[in-house]
Length: 201
Image (cartoon, rainbow, N blue to C red):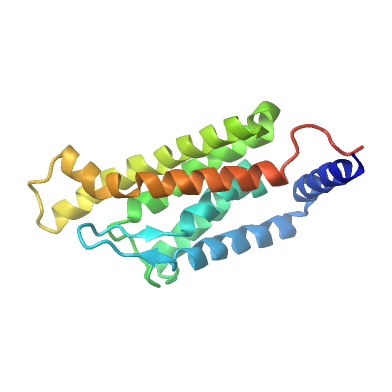
């Protein structure tokens, strides 16, 4: 029982530390999470039949809202997207600018805002099954702009005869299993580090 109590106090301490950080501290964490996202973006598996690779950055995206909360977590993804669009080469493959995957990157912002909102304001969402469900919904939140942007990008590249089913085959189908695995892993990590209630005592 003492071990469990110590773990609970540790989790609560982390959560309280994050909540009580100064503005400069939160800005530093925001830059740090954006940099971590860029680092994990370099973990990539190109697929020969689609311009969208499998990457590791989604793990940072799913955890940003949990670790930093709604606004600072969302801000970290906005920073990642904004600086990458402006020219910082921390998108996958050490690239920048809005390429084929630009819609997914822009979708990271609402996905993180969504997760941060629920974890910060709804204690019941911090249980394992709700967390897993939230991670899966957040995945859908970046799939939608990702597929829409991919369609525009293909169209601008001269590929105009691809329909919705073709877009889903290029931008969703190859990634469902891997992204479910990422969502489950992120949910387990989140469940391990955030308190389900006031566990300070």
